[in-house]
Amino acid sequence: MDQGFVYHWRGDAQVLRKIARQVLGDEAFCWVADAPRLEVLSGIPDDLKDQGALFNMRGEIRWQRRGDEYEAVFLMDEPISVSCEQVNGEWRSKELKVFLQSLEERQVDPQFEVYPHGASEGRLLGRIFYRDGICLFTSPRRFEPDEEGEK
Image 1 (cartoon, rainbow, N blue to C red):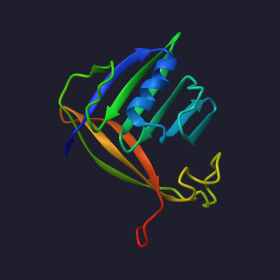
Image 2 (image 1 turned 135 degrees about the vertical axis):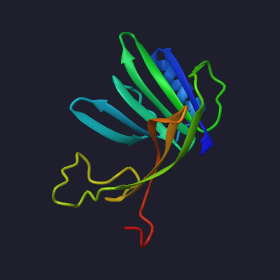
Image 3 (image 1 turned 60 degrees about the vertical axis):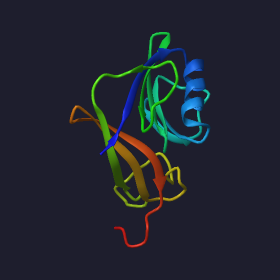
Image 4 (image 1 turned 45 degrees about the vertical axis):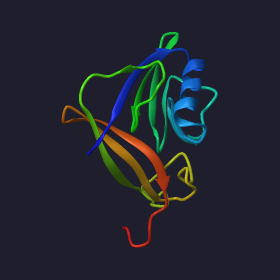
């Protein structure tokens, strides 16, 4: 297992977007929950909604609005140098590979036709985060098409 880095942050949406660009860059996937709809998009949205997440191969930022502020957790593969509080514990992580259900199967009724990588099936790569040996987070990183023969 690799070392993981987990941080906590609280502040306004504009600062959170600025920190996200600093930590993840502009190329990231985003899911935003806007009940009753969950969308996965590319890029950092202008409207963060009440809850959601940004992720790419550098890490993941999850947020939830709490009154006038946003509260966020950063699940990172490397240490970051922004004004965040490091969460206590011994954090470790390991690779995760999830096969995505084909959107063409009859029992699936998605709100979208393709996954963010442009195909109707594939894989989601991510990391599993453990604190003091206990699994606490499953963190997505990127979408990929299936490699031949992997079914």
